[in-house]
Amino acid sequence: MYPLQELVRVNLRWARKAASIRWLSITLWIYSLGALISIITDVHVTGYQIALLSGVVPPWSQGSVESWPIAIAGTCTMLGLSATGLYSVLTSSPYLQPVRNVLHSMRLWWQYYRTYVALYPLWAELWRTLPAEALDPSRSRLADLFRLRAKHNLYRRTIELTDFQQSLRRFTPSDAYAEAESLGRARGLTGPVLDAAVDAAGLAVGRAAYLADQPRRNSPVPPASRTEDGTSAQEARRWLLISDLYFHSPVVADVLAAPALVTERGDVS
Image (cartoon, rainbow, N blue to C red):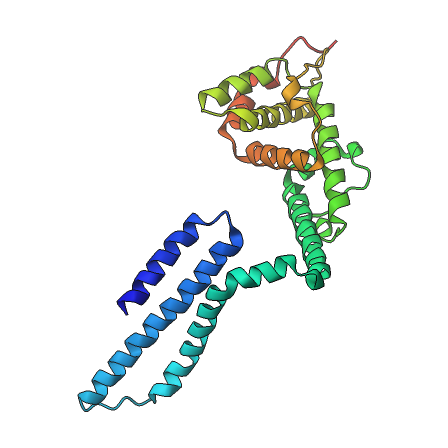
């Protein structure tokens, strides 16, 4: 029993360390599960035999309880032991190439769809502010879920979010970006997270100024790092970060709470 216990402990430790190698981590977890079930089965065997030696006959047969755990433990153990060879076959066999292609396409579709759906709250808030910017908007969250052209929909959503951002910039006071950047740095934000926080604050302040009908005379231009175009995947990741910070970042809340940034006077001609 002690070797099995050590096996579980070592496998779980290495499963956590190998989290970046997903198939290996999963294999170690499966192997650990098999060893854990074996430990439980051994405990039952020991207890059952002690009961018989003590003259107590349990109301169940030993085989009726131990047969299915032993089968599961054996299956998990064999999967763990043969995982490397099985993984090699699944990833390199030419006969399985069509299956791999289908699985790859399904995985990509799910990533696109999940990202598209995750961007809905930010898109919906900005769309309700600027409804003319969207060509074919979803009328509800439920309707949005049934738009299944995931890659096309995600590409269009990031474009519409960029259009919303461009439209709101002329309502954003010139010092909003600088204030957001200063607050972000004070909170330890750097790199893409800081840029996303500044963009999120700009959206929030611009939206508030738009609703207050206070456009600026001259549109401020954010730093180049926040206006350069990237790949579709980079843009999607950027907007996911902006969306999260827009709703949850204290930097956005602090900038939005500053009255001078939203109700700046003297900018309307």
